[in-house]
Figure 1: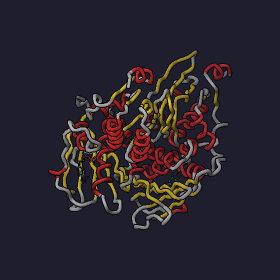
Figure 2: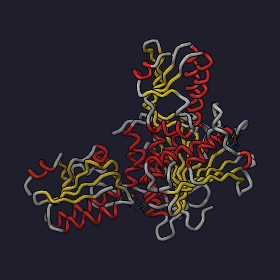
Figure 3: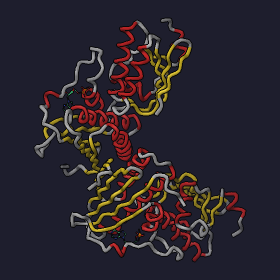
Length: 145
Length: 145
Length: 110
Length: 110
Ligand SMILES: Nc1ncnc2c1ncn2[C@@H]1O[C@H](COP(=O)(O)OP(=O)(O)O)[C@@H](O)[C@H]1O
Ligand SMILES: Nc1ncnc2c1ncn2[C@@H]1O[C@H](COP(=O)(O)OP(=O)(O)O)[C@@H](O)[C@H]1O
């Protein structure tokens, strides 16, 4: 699943349950530091992964037994690639859109956060035919707004 | 792979390379705290996993391309279970013995450490037919010598 | 992980710490809405919070809206830089009343 | 991760920090053996080391043995409790000369 210039650092598999997220965040934090990201970037990466997994927990497995999340951490030359795979129903990527922030309401920030925090986010059906893959990329030294 | 009263916290897969160990240790540390282990026990668990993975890196894949390590973290009622799987040649478990510490020499401490630090360590061929599984258990509140 | 509620000069001050995520947000939401429901001004001390995600933010937004409906105040005090980053990201840093400390919050009349 | 070598009153003092594992042990081994090879007493400051595994211990044992062969001293100073635990586990806490600080190590005549 990785291009020639992408190296697998680590892959995590865990049940899509909220109480696992603290473990996942610790691992992602460690991986971001390992890749040489500074603390603000590291926090941004951790938040983006938190939001991605949260969406799997809340939406991908909504109304059925909690499935598995696979989180792949890959290192490119100048970037960290995070690949979140679920095994839920395939979702139309067009439906995964940020909402307008001008309206004050609880919720609906996850997709927006991920897009703001990362250099790229791509959501699509899993190449294996079951579920979805959200791939996010963070480049080193990419400007924070 | 888990009994009824064992719950999978997290599974890690990573290339058997020494530079991955810092990430693995951070995850294990986080999991041990998550399970309520105190800091001395947490350090012991982290060291035992470090030694187990080190042996896979040094011995299981010796003389061939570095393979994969799978580290399963499972929680039992009163214990953390750590399962290290390699995909190297099946090893006779009788060969996995601690050495006599009276002789001063560099090396040969890993097996001894794991046995001392954990409540149980069991090495055997993988049930899948390829490689080996080392399963270690740490009970909560188990006395430190 | 502690959620401590104290009364200070007629206001309820809620001190949070650690990481506020999906696992913790439901309990936090209940606590905040319950405090706001008591008809008192509520201040949430975020100085010890090192992580907050969209689910934690949602609980705060919901509480702010409930307080507005009640005609009471809902403010944040001592927001840590890590958390402020997330409020800025959500463009909520101007929506919430954010004070450096309790005394500054107190100085603003209801 | 720093390995700083300084000379102090005729001895080589090597300050280590962080986590000493299989990834770092080969480089550490070279450094230690090189220092011991200079024919001087060597002291390794372990106060900032938070983790050491069997590969790090092996480098220290090998250096101790080389120093013994040379007739020079090889000692440890300010061993952190985390590291002392591992020396005790390996029953090496009585094998190595371990001093609370540089002055205590210095006071022992070669
Ligand atoms: N992994 C996913 N599987 C299915 N639907 C999703 C997934 N992620 C996001 N969505 C959809 O996109 C919407 C917007 O997501 P988000 O911005 O994170 O806000 P929220 O999760 O608070 O609704 C969700 O309400 C959901 O309908
Ligand atoms: N995962 C493994 N695969 C193959 N052989 C192993 C494995 N783990 C341990 N061994 C064998 O057991 C011996 C003792 O291991 P250990 O006590 O960790 O010391 P060391 O690794 O320093 O030799 C090793 O030298 C090796 O021969």
